[in-house]
Image (cartoon, rainbow, N blue to C red; front, side):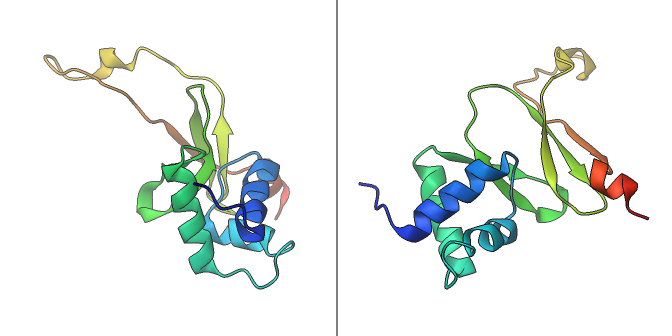
Length: 125
């Protein structure tokens, strides 16, 4: 049974409003606008609970960074800005990556992560 707390709802709204994967620290900063006393431990517990309920998905990034996004029904990839470290969704896929696997191997899925600079960081000196 899901508990509908102010904290949980603020975290959920932060993920919805962002429209992109958020780090726990980004979730905390956004949700604290609604619930000033919110702590990082509550964010971690809540995103784990939302993931267990199938509402959010973890996006594992190189270097151990994990972001969270609303669960999607469509296949997509991600872009990480090397300037601000924000993560964005990439809609589209080159597809058929099984042809890149070594002979005799079977591809069961793939993750594609693009790196570069977001529009804001490209214009910032």
